[in-house]
Length: 229
Image (tube, rainbow, N blue to C red; front, side):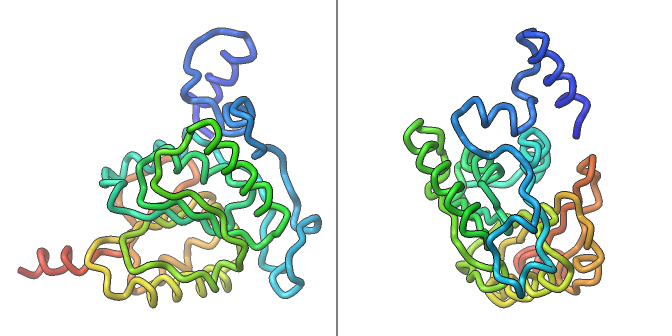
């Protein structure tokens, strides 16, 4: 949470028209007609038994915090794909779709949450809320999803345990092994950050992103050439 987000919620309850661009995701997306609110515990999710032990509950993240972290990357969004692993109902997909990414894709293992995300995407299209070139949700386990060999911003909101996270990192490394551009990994509520800290490819970005966020980068080959050139 952020101080501005809390202040914005107070203003909204008091019907004071200030700071509303900083309101948390569950308020402003609900008013947009999207179903992203609530908490869905893992016991209530329709997921295969072999993935249940590693799964984490669904809860919408803060829209403002996400935008704050994303915009501090200072990247050309139109050159990047955005992927949310464990995207649930699509709260962060809705936020990311407001930027001109090449594509915004959610990977969700729960069929029910995936269907809700698809309904939200249809509503966003109907309301002309999408700036990304493509917005979709994919019903799949995280480690099975193949990434196109192009620049990516990866997002995870503590969606699964360390074993699955390691498999996701291995898949990213394989699919994007020939990438010249950097790959960014946005980790919200980073319970298993040690998996990325130990990675020989990803480096933790030195600047603070605030709150419960860590951001890692896998430098592109062009960056490495500039460093050694």
